[in-house]
Image 1 (cartoon, chains in turn cyan, yellow):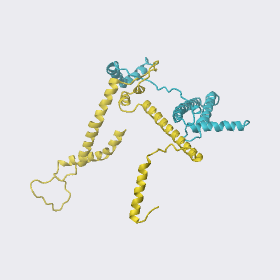
Image 2 (spheres, one colour; image 1 turned 90 degrees about the vertical axis):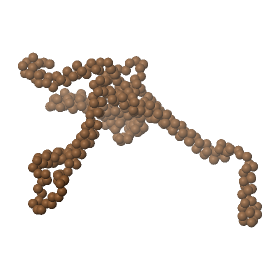
Image 3 (cartoon, helix red, strand yellow; image 1 turned 135 degrees about the horizontal axis):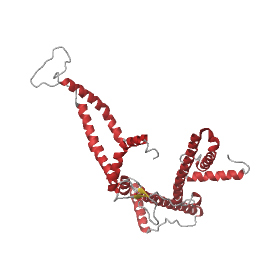
Image 4 (cartoon, chains in turn brown, purple; image 1 turned 180 degrees about the vertical axis):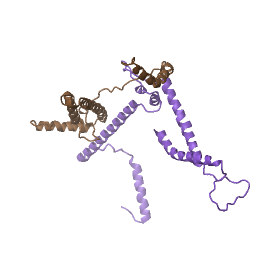
Length: 154
Length: 193
């Protein structure tokens, strides 16, 4: 670290080492030699893409179930993406303070766009909303656009 | 977390029992029984009972501590420490080409991996079984719909022998009919045309 050679730095490091020393000793001398022989690996799950609901035949329960599971996973991913963008915007506004209006503008726009898109796809279909509800919502939205070509939704 | 909530009901009466016990021990040196009244106290016999507060709560609390610590916390703690120190956590790596990881190789902790391998059902197996059950029910739905449609058409057009018609030998039915008719005639004394 930066100030470790100053007297105060050495003192602070010494205080830290009171707690860290025994822990590091146990870790490096006792635990790691024991664990050298077994080294297990773990992986992240990969889900291959399957047919979406618009490609499924009517009355094909297997296809609908797989589409539903894929929709659930996609919804989780999209929700996490929106959360990350929201966090970034909040942190930027907190950090910049009064300058946030022009310094965090891009982040604010990105988050707004992402939130609106999330709502278009997943919003307003309830807690039990499944993939067929989302599909029908899209169908009605496209119908509305077809019938009202001059109006915008937002 | 569960162990803590199990212990909490033991702590209150335990503390009370502790303080009670301390008071009893403090006062034990002075008198065999504390002076509770200045009236006449009958003292009979050579083996007199020591009138003391109940030791039940204290003994019960010690019992509970022994039970939860030495049978619960200590063995499980030692087992968990052994697993984590000797086997250790798994490292996250990319999936190699054309290798399908085993179902337990998606978890990090050694005990989690053991449970996933030997105790719990593999999620892939459950998924495939769900797909199969849904497919089978879907086939049943199709067959039922088809049957209903065929029956409705046969009812409308009245031009086809039902597929449920199984030809049987007529003699048994005729004999049964004749027997029933004669029995009724005997009973009522009339002749049924």
